[in-house]
Image 1: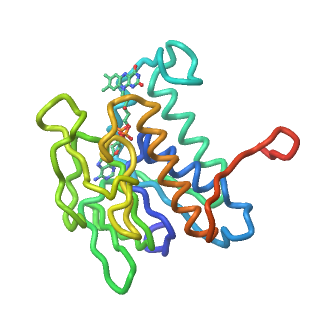
Image 2: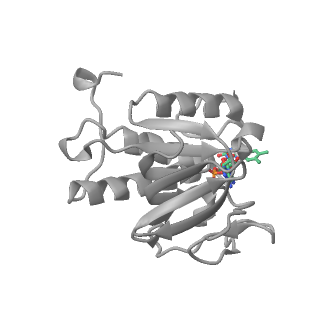
Length: 205
Ligand SMILES: Cc1cc2nc3c(=O)[nH]c(=O)nc-3n(C[C@H](O)[C@H](O)[C@H](O)COP(=O)(O)OP(=O)(O)OC[C@H]3O[C@@H](n4cnc5c(N)ncnc54)[C@H](O)[C@@H]3O)c2cc1C
Protein backbone atom coordinates (compact mmCIF):
# COMPACT_ATOMS: atom_id res chain seq x y z
CA UNK A 1 0.00 0.00 0.00
CA UNK A 2 3.07 2.31 -0.14
CA UNK A 3 2.47 5.81 -1.60
CA UNK A 4 -1.28 5.26 -1.53
CA UNK A 5 -3.34 7.90 0.24
CA UNK A 6 -4.78 6.59 3.49
CA UNK A 7 -7.41 7.83 5.88
CA UNK A 8 -5.73 6.56 9.02
CA UNK A 9 -2.12 5.51 9.42
CA UNK A 10 -1.40 3.76 12.72
CA UNK A 11 2.25 3.71 13.73
CA UNK A 12 2.80 0.67 15.94
CA UNK A 13 1.02 -2.66 15.74
CA UNK A 14 0.93 -3.90 19.33
CA UNK A 15 -2.10 -4.12 21.61
CA UNK A 16 -3.11 -0.47 21.19
CA UNK A 17 -2.48 -0.05 17.47
CA UNK A 18 -4.11 -3.31 16.39
CA UNK A 19 -7.13 -2.73 18.62
CA UNK A 20 -7.52 0.71 17.07
CA UNK A 21 -7.23 -0.70 13.54
CA UNK A 22 -9.75 -3.51 14.00
CA UNK A 23 -12.33 -1.25 15.61
CA UNK A 24 -11.96 1.31 12.83
CA UNK A 25 -12.18 -1.32 10.10
CA UNK A 26 -15.16 -3.06 11.72
CA UNK A 27 -17.29 -0.08 10.69
CA UNK A 28 -16.54 -0.55 7.00
CA UNK A 29 -20.14 -1.47 6.08
CA UNK A 30 -21.64 1.69 7.58
CA UNK A 31 -23.06 4.05 4.97
CA UNK A 32 -20.84 6.93 6.13
CA UNK A 33 -17.60 4.88 6.03
CA UNK A 34 -17.15 5.37 2.28
CA UNK A 35 -13.97 4.03 0.71
CA UNK A 36 -11.71 4.81 3.62
CA UNK A 37 -8.49 2.82 4.15
CA UNK A 38 -6.51 2.06 7.29
CA UNK A 39 -2.91 0.91 7.52
CA UNK A 40 -0.81 -0.26 10.47
CA UNK A 41 2.98 -0.06 10.20
CA UNK A 42 4.87 -2.09 12.76
CA UNK A 43 8.45 -3.09 13.45
CA UNK A 44 7.61 -6.22 15.44
CA UNK A 45 8.84 -5.29 18.92
CA UNK A 46 5.58 -5.41 20.87
CA UNK A 47 5.81 -5.97 24.62
CA UNK A 48 2.98 -8.42 24.16
CA UNK A 49 5.41 -10.76 22.44
CA UNK A 50 7.09 -11.34 25.83
CA UNK A 51 3.95 -11.94 27.86
CA UNK A 52 2.01 -14.95 29.07
CA UNK A 53 -1.46 -13.70 29.87
CA UNK A 54 -3.46 -14.91 32.86
CA UNK A 55 -5.35 -11.72 33.69
CA UNK A 56 -6.39 -10.29 30.32
CA UNK A 57 -10.18 -10.16 30.04
CA UNK A 58 -11.58 -12.67 27.56
CA UNK A 59 -8.17 -14.19 26.82
CA UNK A 60 -7.64 -17.87 27.70
CA UNK A 61 -5.62 -18.23 30.92
CA UNK A 62 -1.97 -18.90 30.05
CA UNK A 63 -2.26 -17.75 26.43
CA UNK A 64 1.04 -16.49 25.04
CA UNK A 65 1.08 -12.82 24.13
CA UNK A 66 2.67 -13.76 20.80
CA UNK A 67 -0.43 -15.84 19.97
CA UNK A 68 -2.71 -13.00 21.00
CA UNK A 69 -0.78 -10.69 18.68
CA UNK A 70 -1.19 -13.18 15.81
CA UNK A 71 -4.92 -13.40 16.49
CA UNK A 72 -5.23 -9.61 16.61
CA UNK A 73 -3.42 -9.26 13.29
CA UNK A 74 -5.88 -11.75 11.76
CA UNK A 75 -8.75 -9.74 13.19
CA UNK A 76 -7.42 -6.62 11.47
CA UNK A 77 -6.90 -8.47 8.20
CA UNK A 78 -10.43 -9.97 8.14
CA UNK A 79 -11.63 -6.57 6.88
CA UNK A 80 -11.06 -5.47 3.29
CA UNK A 81 -10.26 -1.88 4.34
CA UNK A 82 -7.32 -2.52 6.68
CA UNK A 83 -3.76 -3.71 6.11
CA UNK A 84 -0.56 -4.21 8.07
CA UNK A 85 2.94 -3.58 6.77
CA UNK A 86 6.30 -4.29 8.36
CA UNK A 87 8.55 -1.31 8.77
CA UNK A 88 9.85 1.34 11.12
CA UNK A 89 8.54 4.88 10.71
CA UNK A 90 11.36 7.34 11.30
CA UNK A 91 9.71 10.68 10.43
CA UNK A 92 6.38 12.39 9.91
CA UNK A 93 5.55 15.76 8.37
CA UNK A 94 2.41 17.61 7.37
CA UNK A 95 1.67 19.57 4.24
CA UNK A 96 -1.70 20.81 2.91
CA UNK A 97 -3.63 18.94 5.61
CA UNK A 98 -2.02 15.62 4.70
CA UNK A 99 0.48 13.75 6.86
CA UNK A 100 3.43 12.01 5.27
CA UNK A 101 5.23 9.21 7.10
CA UNK A 102 8.60 7.91 5.97
CA UNK A 103 10.16 4.62 6.97
CA UNK A 104 13.84 4.00 7.58
CA UNK A 105 13.99 2.24 4.19
CA UNK A 106 12.53 5.36 2.52
CA UNK A 107 8.99 4.10 1.91
CA UNK A 108 6.37 6.83 2.19
CA UNK A 109 2.70 6.86 3.15
CA UNK A 110 0.29 9.77 3.16
CA UNK A 111 -2.69 9.90 5.48
CA UNK A 112 -5.39 12.31 6.69
CA UNK A 113 -5.09 11.08 10.28
CA UNK A 114 -2.19 9.69 12.29
CA UNK A 115 -2.37 7.45 15.34
CA UNK A 116 0.83 7.00 17.34
CA UNK A 117 0.81 3.63 19.14
CA UNK A 118 4.50 2.87 19.60
CA UNK A 119 4.31 1.76 23.23
CA UNK A 120 5.74 3.60 26.24
CA UNK A 121 9.40 2.65 25.73
CA UNK A 122 10.23 4.50 22.52
CA UNK A 123 8.79 6.86 19.93
CA UNK A 124 11.87 7.62 17.86
CA UNK A 125 10.14 9.58 15.14
CA UNK A 126 11.23 12.97 13.80
CA UNK A 127 8.53 15.61 13.34
CA UNK A 128 6.30 14.59 16.25
CA UNK A 129 3.57 17.22 16.68
CA UNK A 130 4.48 17.72 20.35
CA UNK A 131 7.23 16.87 22.78
CA UNK A 132 7.29 13.53 24.56
CA UNK A 133 7.08 13.68 28.34
CA UNK A 134 7.76 11.27 31.22
CA UNK A 135 5.08 8.59 31.58
CA UNK A 136 2.93 9.17 34.68
CA UNK A 137 2.22 5.47 35.35
CA UNK A 138 5.24 3.77 33.79
CA UNK A 139 7.06 2.94 37.01
CA UNK A 140 10.47 3.56 35.39
CA UNK A 141 12.11 6.88 34.60
CA UNK A 142 12.66 6.12 30.90
CA UNK A 143 9.00 5.46 30.08
CA UNK A 144 7.39 8.08 27.85
CA UNK A 145 4.02 9.42 26.80
CA UNK A 146 2.79 11.70 24.06
CA UNK A 147 0.75 14.49 25.66
CA UNK A 148 -2.88 14.77 24.56
CA UNK A 149 -6.07 16.60 25.50
CA UNK A 150 -7.20 14.01 28.03
CA UNK A 151 -9.21 12.18 25.36
CA UNK A 152 -6.22 10.87 23.35
CA UNK A 153 -6.27 13.67 20.76
CA UNK A 154 -3.06 15.59 20.14
CA UNK A 155 -4.86 17.65 17.49
CA UNK A 156 -7.86 17.13 15.21
CA UNK A 157 -5.90 14.74 13.00
CA UNK A 158 -3.42 13.20 15.45
CA UNK A 159 -4.26 10.69 18.18
CA UNK A 160 -2.28 8.55 20.57
CA UNK A 161 -3.19 4.97 21.53
CA UNK A 162 -1.88 2.22 23.79
CA UNK A 163 0.56 2.94 26.61
CA UNK A 164 2.07 5.92 24.80
CA UNK A 165 -1.16 7.69 25.81
CA UNK A 166 -0.28 7.32 29.50
CA UNK A 167 -2.18 4.21 30.63
CA UNK A 168 -0.74 1.56 32.94
CA UNK A 169 0.93 -1.48 31.42
CA UNK A 170 -1.96 -3.92 31.12
CA UNK A 171 -3.14 -5.46 27.87
CA UNK A 172 -6.75 -4.41 28.51
CA UNK A 173 -5.77 -0.79 29.08
CA UNK A 174 -3.59 -0.55 25.96
CA UNK A 175 -6.22 -2.24 23.79
CA UNK A 176 -9.00 -0.20 25.38
CA UNK A 177 -7.34 3.11 24.58
CA UNK A 178 -6.87 1.91 20.99
CA UNK A 179 -10.58 1.12 20.71
CA UNK A 180 -11.55 4.48 22.22
CA UNK A 181 -9.40 6.35 19.71
CA UNK A 182 -11.04 4.39 16.89
CA UNK A 183 -14.54 5.13 18.09
CA UNK A 184 -13.73 8.82 18.36
CA UNK A 185 -12.41 8.87 14.78
CA UNK A 186 -15.47 6.93 13.59
CA UNK A 187 -17.74 9.40 15.37
CA UNK A 188 -16.09 12.23 13.43
CA UNK A 189 -16.67 10.37 10.16
CA UNK A 190 -20.29 9.56 11.12
CA UNK A 191 -21.01 13.15 12.17
CA UNK A 192 -22.53 11.88 15.45
CA UNK A 193 -21.48 9.75 18.43
CA UNK A 194 -21.28 6.13 17.32
CA UNK A 195 -19.84 2.69 18.17
CA UNK A 196 -19.70 -0.67 16.40
CA UNK A 197 -21.69 -3.58 17.84
CA UNK A 198 -22.17 -6.91 16.10
CA UNK A 199 -24.99 -9.33 16.96
CA UNK A 200 -25.19 -13.05 16.14
CA UNK A 201 -28.03 -12.87 13.67
CA UNK A 202 -26.46 -10.20 11.43
CA UNK A 203 -22.73 -10.81 11.67
CA UNK A 204 -20.85 -12.15 8.65
CA UNK A 205 -17.65 -13.14 10.52
C1 LIG B 1 7.29 -9.30 30.04
C2 LIG B 1 5.92 -8.67 29.95
C3 LIG B 1 4.83 -9.36 30.48
C4 LIG B 1 3.55 -8.81 30.41
N1 LIG B 1 2.52 -9.48 30.97
C5 LIG B 1 1.26 -8.92 30.97
C6 LIG B 1 0.19 -9.59 31.61
O1 LIG B 1 0.35 -10.68 32.18
N2 LIG B 1 -1.03 -8.99 31.58
C7 LIG B 1 -1.26 -7.80 30.96
O2 LIG B 1 -2.40 -7.32 30.94
N3 LIG B 1 -0.23 -7.13 30.36
C8 LIG B 1 1.01 -7.67 30.36
N4 LIG B 1 2.06 -7.00 29.78
C9 LIG B 1 1.82 -5.65 29.22
C10 LIG B 1 1.32 -5.62 27.77
O3 LIG B 1 2.15 -6.42 26.96
C11 LIG B 1 1.35 -4.15 27.31
O4 LIG B 1 0.50 -3.41 28.17
C12 LIG B 1 0.91 -3.93 25.88
O5 LIG B 1 1.63 -4.74 24.99
C13 LIG B 1 1.11 -2.47 25.52
O6 LIG B 1 0.55 -2.24 24.25
P1 LIG B 1 1.06 -1.02 23.34
O7 LIG B 1 0.31 -1.12 22.07
O8 LIG B 1 1.04 0.24 24.09
O9 LIG B 1 2.61 -1.34 23.09
P2 LIG B 1 3.24 -2.60 22.38
O10 LIG B 1 2.35 -3.78 22.48
O11 LIG B 1 4.63 -2.72 22.91
O12 LIG B 1 3.25 -2.21 20.83
C14 LIG B 1 3.98 -1.13 20.33
C15 LIG B 1 4.35 -1.49 18.89
O13 LIG B 1 4.84 -0.33 18.22
C16 LIG B 1 5.92 -0.74 17.38
N5 LIG B 1 6.74 0.44 17.09
C17 LIG B 1 7.42 1.24 17.94
N6 LIG B 1 8.01 2.25 17.27
C18 LIG B 1 7.70 2.08 15.95
C19 LIG B 1 8.01 2.80 14.78
N7 LIG B 1 8.75 3.92 14.81
N8 LIG B 1 7.54 2.35 13.58
C20 LIG B 1 6.78 1.22 13.53
N9 LIG B 1 6.44 0.50 14.63
C21 LIG B 1 6.89 0.93 15.83
C22 LIG B 1 6.62 -1.84 18.17
O14 LIG B 1 7.38 -2.70 17.35
C23 LIG B 1 5.43 -2.56 18.80
O15 LIG B 1 4.99 -3.64 17.99
C24 LIG B 1 3.35 -7.53 29.81
C25 LIG B 1 4.44 -6.85 29.26
C26 LIG B 1 5.72 -7.40 29.34
C27 LIG B 1 6.90 -6.64 28.78
